[in-house]
Length: 457
Ligand code: MG
Image (tube, rainbow, N blue to C red; front, side, top):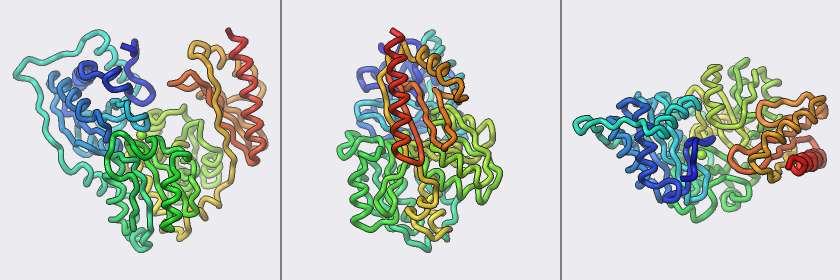
């Protein structure tokens, strides 16, 4: 067993199927989860991976053995399962997904009664039950039941429509291209778009857990088919999901892929124009654009550490209604404070309809920054010491150390240097009005960090 003292990573439990995630291991995890939820009602859902039924059956066995009742919603996007937990007043939920990981992976996300992923403190309680073999199986009369919960996809779709101006959107008959990466996003978005009066062209729409057409991570280099299709059919926009459809990357009407924080800034701007003074939550890895939009339209911006669960929990704590990430996660609190791909599309359609402008025009109105991303290898054992040295060396620049080191310069350029939570690397995100300045920042700090890593033998 490779996982020693921790089960949960930054996004739930992840591993390679039948290597790390064997049926017996998954049953044991589910028994710990079931013990934690004390014979409650648990919603179960899964994405389109090959191993979904193996995982779902193992999770079900573990949960019912501890006296929980399982309500199986079947295939669905993670945000749909999250919404359904809340909508059906479940005590908790389990979503089986490895999100954007390669096809050999699967994973488990544990959800609270409001559909939000559980906090680190709750994870520790489940880990304690697991590692101390403290799961409580009930005797035979108490074993739980498993029943199908139908209609989750439709209820989720209807809930999203309640948050936008459907009449205004319908009038425009937008043409959208959806790339669901052969995942569960194809079960909701194309139907939602049609019900909003759009013409829809779908690519990679059938569910296929081998991800035959592109990797499940919606990075610009993976979206060539979407770009080509948007241009070929003259669509108003294209939209690409990750494997479980909580993240959304847009391609504009000119066929240009947009980073998530730029499209988020459009949603942020529209939201603040209608709700001045509201709090906006975003990780420290987001673009300056998010900050400038908040300043211009009277929002209170709160930076957080990187991680979607952190954004969700910060929103809950501050009662914030909007959050967003650079990877395409948009959190719309009035619907649910979790990232939600279908909700994001509906919000974007409403902006297009209300402004009467194209996506590329709207994006041109935002401040333009060049972004440079890079990484450098650093053994996990050196990460903490290197971070200490780095902070010390840039002290006079008043670094923001919420997550790694972020430096803001007077010419509005910035750089974030941050150890990865999952890989033996440090990541760099530099941003500046001029491309050369952004590249220079990365080069300069890469050199400094390389020196610290080699000195720190
Ligand atoms: Mg995801």
